Image 1 (cartoon, rainbow, N blue to C red):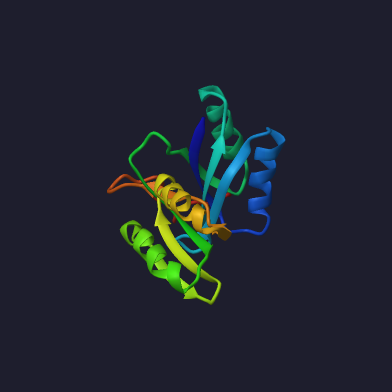
Image 2 (image 1 turned 60 degrees about the horizontal axis):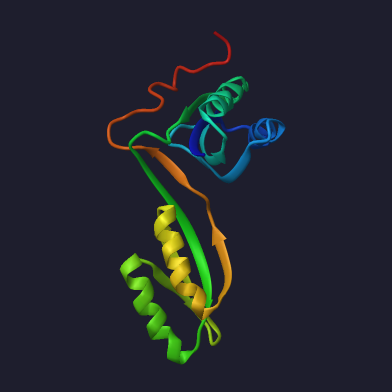
Length: 173
């Protein structure tokens, strides 16, 4: 089963390697992983999508990650109210005759054509996985030359807070 896990971590060299090392050692398959700085100095947020076999494995995953020194908090947010998006760039084979047709396909998806050449166009789309997969399926008959995906990034909706007060966080207590 697919799980969406977020980890708030110290922005230190090697943190990503240690986190992925724990996942690899336990043979969790990482579908996607995104990492970026947060609004707090020295703190980054990781969002990763992993496949686990059952709830016990999902719980084991969060327990193992919480043991890492640079990890501040780990949350499995799969079953919570979340906002989740992915950015995808799609290069599609195109000529003068098919450009407007492809433009008509991407418009309902709120996608943008960001580059045009003689043989191809590049489309940018953001959204959930189902939306992106649907657009890719519609563009396949034209010939997809290349796809680049950022991976899913997510956090809790509204006023739900994952981590309340990180400013007082210290390794020495």
